[in-house]
Length: 268
Image 1 (tube, rainbow, N blue to C red):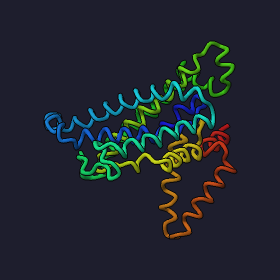
Image 2: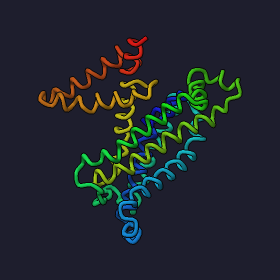
Image 3: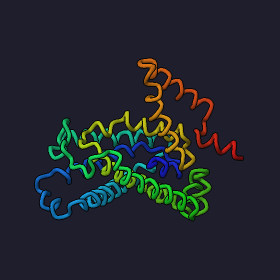
């Protein structure tokens, strides 16, 4: 869903997976570094919200630093710039001793033994994100975002600070991705550079495009389909990947506006 924020302004960004990786490293380092052991003992469970806040702040600051130069680009050039950011971040963490290098960080403290209990982490965040997007789309800021997406030149002529609004939407997406990464690290118990690869960025983009890039529900619908489809087709063994790819191709051809767009047409 973090990809939807820049898409509200018509910007195709693949940087979210990089900020997801960054947030995970923040949580992993804060959860395992020996020098922070007294702080972890003092805060107990409340160490996890602190990790989320630090990941949020780090993602927003880096998003601002990246956003202003990158968002002057458009279309495929912006996508290439954000891909470059993901690749650079991956190289950096591979060469940082504090990040565990290629091996990564293991033994991240887990607040829950049962994985289903993590619904209490991600469920409220999902509900809050959907509610925030619902309010944003109906606010003046949301209408400015949509005006840039529909006609950037007209929005600029009407006095809209196009670059500033693009950066604002981009930073919101970065912040969400960073917090989700910080929540995911304890769930996985380990974190390494594979969490922020180009393949993962393309997978997230596929969720949004198949689900519908012009709707806040698109990412949820696309993720539900593309994550569950390989499991549903598992009895077919090796053939399931062929069918999975076929479904993606057919969805792109016959549902150019995604699943959410298909529902919108039926409703109208």
